[in-house]
Image (tube, rainbow, N blue to C red; front, side, top):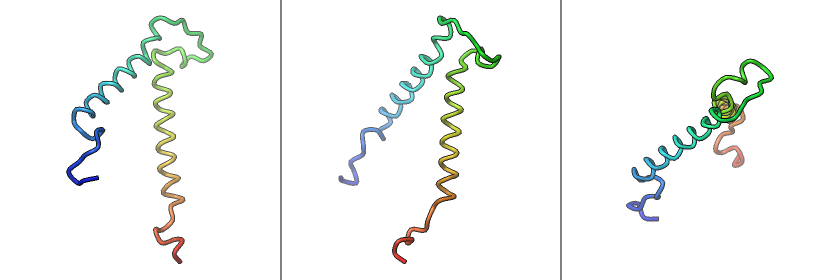
Length: 82
């Protein structure tokens, strides 16, 4: 690939469209809370948007854990050349 060529996902237009798409997806995730009756087992799972923010926090925790594990298990670049 030529240095002047860029990937289509790195163009400002595509980045803006992706952010808009993600925002719409997040709104669609919370929207059913208005229409679906919830049967909570605990007090916290009856809060508005619980499954959306719980899923986000769980995903963020997995990313942070993976980053920490990566740093813990990382080997030097010349590990196999020794």
